[in-house]
Image (cartoon, rainbow, N blue to C red; front, side):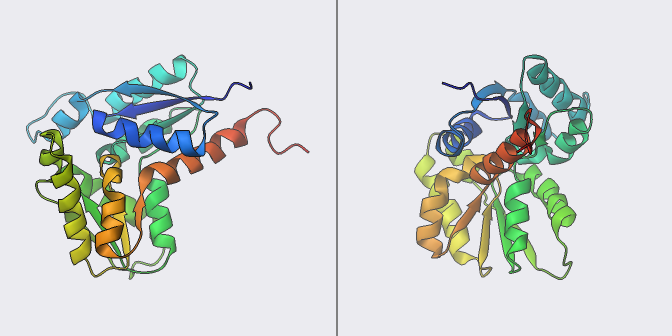
Length: 225
């Protein structure tokens, strides 16, 4: 059996691990995803008094560890650190993908109003900048909403309430395009689609497809016929 590429996954919460791995199993089973988890990233991002090393330096250290151990591509799974991931990625030679850039790009390409739902407050700010980066038409409406209480429910073991709160928010939304802005929210996609009556764009599957394309394009002999 041909050995697939090692892909470094970097998580700020354990809740993002299974959605990412499920996407690899379905869409890129040959890849060898390897997980690193640093939950202090999320804790410190939520702390308005945090004054430690920059998140860019912390993200870069985790990325360099993966690359030093043979990773041929990197996928970060916490949207709150999108800016730091982009900055750190410029220092690396392997493809580095931010969690939701593929999902946001896909949502905006549809040309209809978008609502991005998040459950972690710091994510709203950075996903907003991601939208600004990819939105070609500044007049295209994009709304952002924090689903209060959902993440706390999931951390407390009440996954059903987490999913229900997200689905309720989606059902109230008028926008035809829905984006679930965190990997931990992907588990709610089926309920969201049922309650809202339209598909929900989630990050993991689109990210794996994009990273597969980027990594395979760098493989020896790529593009040679």
